Image (tube, rainbow, N blue to C red; front, side):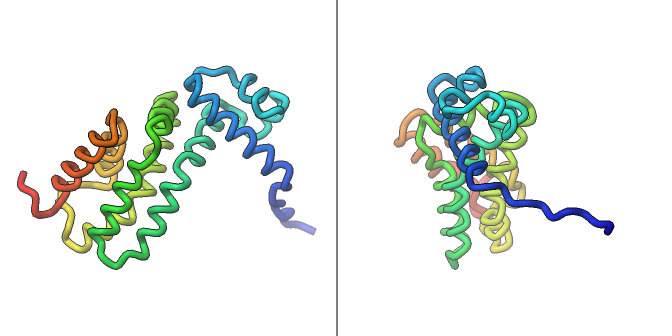
Length: 186
């Protein structure tokens, strides 16, 4: 019999262990930054280092998993925005919600994205995937400046995320959104 064997879904205990490792890694990265020793992450998860490396062969693999978890709620909000009829409102919601992570999460996300070229590109892809559909929809409706790309929007989201206070973030969002409008002056 030729052919390939079916791919098995991960067992529940494997999924649970993976989630424990990701939660421990996120907490450790938030507390100590991305330079923390991976053995410490495994210890915090109550697991052997070999288990960590079985799930995440490299530190970049672990960081990508943490970035995925950190952006999950933002992605959910973007998915919900597809139900909004008005493309301007949908875009505004996606853009502002993409900038709605807690300050310590934003700082950690940025630090993790800066660990390597690979993690930086991965973080950028995550943000682009969040803002892309609403950006394309607003462009199709004629509401976005022609020279603005999805990559630009991802960059603007990151720019708004580095503000120091909620008030600064609100102002940054208002200014950026006004400047993105097809009716804004150059």
